[in-house]
Every structure is written in C-alpha cells, then in structure tokens.
Length: 430
Image: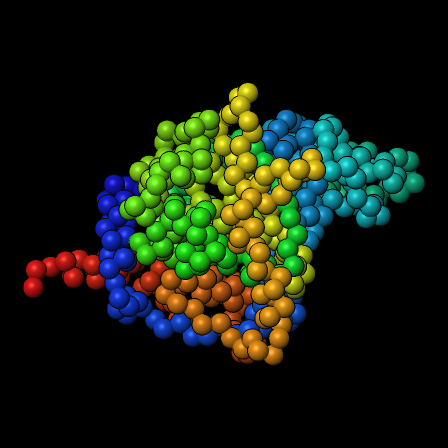
C-alpha cells in the first residue's frame, strides 16, 4: 500500500508532467528497436525458451479449483499442466503426464476427485502427486519403486486467491519476482476478490503488438476518444518503471471530465467497493504491467487483468478477466466483454478499439517497409519491457540485429526517480 508521502509526490508529478515541454533532463534517448522483435521466428523461439519457461505466469483463480479435490487443465504456456486443490488444502501444479506411458492423467477440462487416475492403464495418484495405484504391479518386478514415480510437479505459488506457476524449478519465489508490486497491491484485496468472468479471444498478431497497445496512453486521444479519453488525462500520466520489467502508470481524469458520462465505467453503482483502496485507486486510473504478460488497471471496484499468450509468431490468445467482491444476486460483473446476441460474449468497445489494428499492424510489420520502432518518453514502459525480455533471454544469446540497447539504467528504475529532484528544483524561487 502506498504511503501518503508517495501519494502526494505522484499527485505533484502529474502536474509536473503536464507542464514539461520535453523529456525529463537526463532521461536517455531511446534507440530504435529492431523490427525483427515482432516478426522473427528466431526471436520468438528465444522468448519461448527463456521467457515463458522461466517467468511466473498467472494460471488460475482459486474459484476455479475451490474445494479439496478440485482440478483443472491449463496449457496457456505451451505445456499441459493440471492445477490441483489437494485434499490437504494445498494448491499444486503438475505436468498432465502419467509416469507410465505418457498419457494425460486428466482428460476433462475440470472436475473433482480425491484421486487422479490415468484412463490408459489406471495408474492412480493422490492429489499431492504421489503414485498410489498400479494395476498388476507384480509384473514390474521387485525393483519397481512407486515412490519414484510421482507426478512431476511445477512451481506453484499464490498471491491472494490468484494461482501462479513457473516451469523453472530453480526460479526465484513469486514474492521476489513481483518486487514492490507484492506490497503495493495489498490495498486491492486480492485475497477477497471473486472470479466473475474469464473469456478468451484469438488475435492475429504477435503477442507484443497486442500487449503494447495497453502499455502507453499516447494513443488514448486518438482511438479511445469516446471511451477511455474521458477517464484518462494522458498529459498528466505518471509512469514508474519497476525492477524486473514491471511498471505502473497513474493518470487522473481530465479536469473537465463529465462524471455522469463515465459513471458506468469508473463507478459501477451495483458493485461493492473495496474499503482498503487508497486515494489514487479511487480517483485515478492506476494500472500495472507485471512481466511478462499481465496488464491491469486496479481500483476499488475490480481487478480486471488482460493476459496475453503467444500461440505462434503472429497469433495471440487474449484473456479478459474480471474479479470483484461478492456481487450477491446482482448481475455478474464483466468489465471487458458484452453479450454478442448469440448466447456468447464479445469484446467490449474499449478492447475492440485496442485490438482492431492488430492484424493489419502485423501484416504491415512483415513488409519490407517496416525497419525499426522509435519510442517516445511516453512509451518508456515498452522500452523497459523489451530490455527485460533480452535480460531474461540472456544478453549474450540475443543476436545483435535483434537486440535492444540497455539504455534505461537503474537510476530511472524504482525506488529511484530523478523527476522528483527535477520537479523540486524547478519549484524553487529564482
């Protein structure tokens, strides 16, 4: 949770950002990013090996495996996993691969059982992964040891009711991975939020193309003129770069905002309010990027992450999720999707605005006319994100023609912020 001094500093920085006429003094010039980061199979393969197999990834909400014995399949990271709420109350993750002949242990999308049994030869496992049943085990001989044939586990940790997995058994813990987000998110009651909606949509563009549309407010006045623009003053936006590729943006509404016009978006009257959320979460758009693929505004009404999953070099699966406090008998909250008139859901106008150009952008990027990407100070969160991508892959592994230069140094990364000193110096009497 932010202390009051941090809140006041951010409020002052909002006005300072609105008044500047150039990037802050000392902020590095951002070199062009190579085009191949969005179009090269070589770079995509490096991402698959060194980012997606080594990062903490959001997998599920506890409401999806609510009781001991509940399980669900999950394969968004390209590996077949099972998320299991153990009979002992512990949530775990395993590869959905029987230790006998490699068949999937679970074939239904979700269910509940005190045992997990492979349908091929009925090898049976406890919900903690222990192999406890092998039909006709005598035929495997005296050297066969069931204790060595448990399901292979995957690192699994929780933040509130959110379940994260990491395919790297040697990865740092989730708390260390999240860094300052761990404490800063405390006010948003992740431990009390229910899962209201989780919908997926397939996009025809590289996952970074889709995600980066949600990592800057430079575009807001142009494609969100009637939706986001009444909520977000892009000139007074304050970006903060965190270690590990994470970032935060806080933008107040324009000073002339018509509150009645936007009430249905930023103050849903039928939703419960989280009493612990501070001033900025109640009065501004406070949004976070958690590396590698989570973007979400957080407020006193909802936690609505957008999660981006690469399905190929030029296709992405976008998950649109809404979490909120218990809504009782009222309508189920869903911030990002609306009825499609056919019994299903479609993306809301805001999300359609962000995704409408994805396929066309990807095709354009794959042309000979796409050479590189110049980014502005307002888009620094994107550049920092790319720096972290290369660090995760390994700076020595990224071919020079695909690499970004590591120009944003620690002096511009939280808890450091040279803007504060610049702001105070400029405020001093002449």
